[in-house]
Image (cartoon, rainbow, N blue to C red):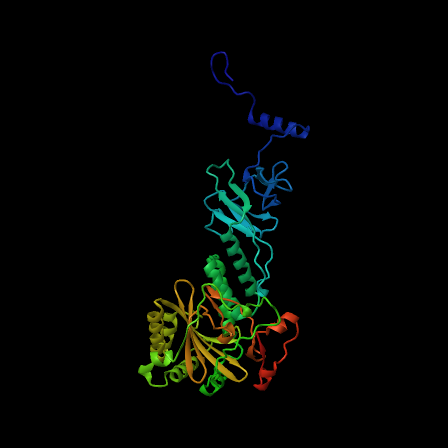
Length: 477
């Protein structure tokens, strides 16, 4: 305010102004309005399906109606949350809840002391996944569809601006669905104390691209189970192996050439005489010839070397799977290099040399490259059947060195030939890209996981077959 002479004058003193403000308040006048700062802005993109989305925010409240109860497909939504106080602090934390998905924690920073992330520090983007339940323990069919939610958080560049949380719901891709199902199966396996199951799920999770943080957590659980001794399978301890893996218990049977059709089911795979693209080649005395440098009884020497190596390495390198014993590296890596490296580490050089000799024989004979090896032994009805399987890098084909007849090895190529029936393979029926189920009768005991065709067809309890009873065994498929 200026006077007529241009000299500035003050209208009223500070005390007068203070008394005036006090009078207004006491008289019930309008108080000056102070705006609360925004802490979060949520943007929901036009999704491909209806979804229920809600935000739980610490120290914040939605302006207006906020988000609707159901976000309709094809419609975008926006909502803003304001601080519950004038000072909003260095950061605001909250949780994103989408019906059918696991809750997702997040944080938005307002100052340099705060952190902006989703799920964990350092992540600004994350994809939430969901799918129907899958009974993987009973080998049920996998769900064919799933759902995904892409979440991204961005910090505010100005003090009067709010950080932005963007959410986009959509259908999950095939790769995402596979990764999520495997991740959930691994988490469920962690809750149990079954070392074999958890180890298998960890291996599958690595192939499916599961988050490393989840795999690390599962591997820590494996270490705990190893300290508890759960890594040693039932019947695979060294004392039991020493009593079982003897040359005198090796199976000595003549392969039958009589094909008897399955009468339980006319469509049983056992009744298929030919399968397109499958050939079986049986070469007698191949192992003796390949290991001739080690003496006339190369097959017996190989058996003794492998049995001795199984007793020399760390307990847990021999484990049970599908009714048979598998000998591999301690971490269950079945590559040739891992097994040979372990054998040399424990001074079993001759066993390593014999395996490498057979690998070279297989590669030269079938013009392929061996990448993995599986040394197995099946104990049924007081008898032992040992085999070594070599897997090629391409095509998924397998080459088995199977101990059969009287101290004889046979090389089995995974293709079936005319005149050779799957029942002659002692439980091993092959296909070009992997195992093919074959229902047939063989010999087994109470530990065998196989059932006979007629037992499966009628849904009966496992009963001993007449021929199996003569040998003191049960029945198997």
